[in-house]
Length: 178
Image (cartoon, rainbow, N blue to C red; front, top):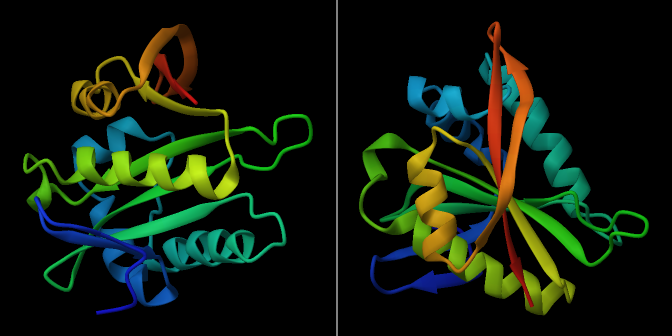
């Protein structure tokens, strides 16, 4: 087990910063067809996953990090990740976006709802944020449920916001304000 940043008792898991050692599990957790539908792009190979993860880890080490990514670990096993991104942008230092992905075998146990809640509290304190945004597809009811249960408010729907696989996709915009 790597050094935990945050621990949860029920459901039981730890949150810790992601490392390159998580590359294989990070890649595998995003290969499920349901998961792939929710993201604009997911790594198509382990090598691509390693490149993506390496870039994120580099951005976490900046004096003013633009990304902060946490692995969710259940009984020593990588279960998914929660990330803060688009942080510390000029004129938008008070805002971050949250994203997450949970391996299918860990879904339906309340893990992601708890993890998102913990990271939101952490982010507001550590980065002194005033707003955290979450964006998910209108068809992704599970993701919307996580945001709603962690206190995010639906601010609106961006119609035809993305174009993927020959279809326009609508996105829900959620935010939590402090």
